[in-house]
Image (cartoon, rainbow over all chains, first blue to last red; front, side):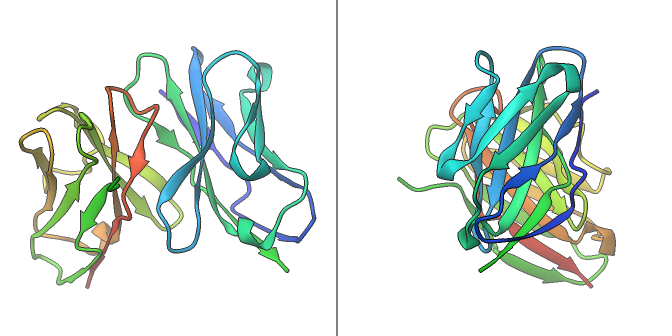
Length: 113
Length: 114
């Protein structure tokens, strides 16, 4: 079975601070990994994804994530957050042969101006 | 082009009533997914359609929940005899091909059961 853990439920940062949101998954085989973002009042949208190749993935709005297979992790990072990054962030895993994404419980990020 | 749409956007109902939630996927998208987003629970997979058939219904929480898809397009999620624990945001997503690697989400239906 697949599972995803996001250990930070709420994060509060000041503008220009660096961000790292943790994501650990549980699945022994090949995985695809995703980060989704939901801005206040908006649809859930894809931030970035890892399928294969370079484990450092760059997404929209300056976000990046690094797949570390040995740690079963896919942490999301941004060197300098902005107020507009205030949102809820979800990590998700898709195990090979599965047809459904499994999401973490999400992390609410509040960036104060 | 138009994205995934869902209706109603909000629904308040009394415990024990039936509700129907509708999803209009992006035109031409063959795969359709329903998720439930409860407070503190993240997104929980409910059911997946490929065309009009549902190869995976494993996430439906009870037999009070059912879903159908007609014409390879619109899908309806029905909850019978609603309970307070059904209160959540119900999200629909569609994908242009089998597999959820490229999903586009709708705005969701916020359901409140009193």
